[in-house]
Length: 237
Image (cartoon, rainbow, N blue to C red):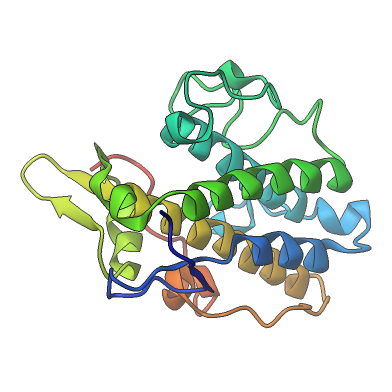
């Protein structure tokens, strides 16, 4: 039996407390921050090498958030979401995946998914999947599901925002996560891109709408905007 769980914005250090990420807020905040933006405002970016946080426009920030919310649960939670079934064909999965084989670089196919209403619908589906995994499964079970991945400077840096559930393995430069910790990381990842949308808006003279909780990645200077310097690299250690 899965016990009732409390929605939260921050992972509780005590694993006996059944707090889960409030994924629905991510959809609400994204819609609020992009509401009535013009195409020019949505597509504003700066590809200068020293301005990495501005490489993705507001629109591409949302597209990446959709990619995270769809690709992660499909890859890491497929057996929980669709036991003995294929995942829904909401996107062309072979073109959207982790690693160098992906046709699209961590965003959705822009020929098919470009308008904000279309992207927000995809984000809503992904948020629903993430929420299902957290609400329909016991936290103890999620903590027993481990995965080890190759580390980058970025991932080694941001796992410091989790109080438990991850460890960096110095010997082989990998990171081991519980599935519970990974699901919290997705929440923090998407939240950080909402903050990037706010920063892009501010750069254009537009005011942010939401007062975001400064949790997860947003406790780190690069991702809140205390500095505009490029953050740690995504390259493998």
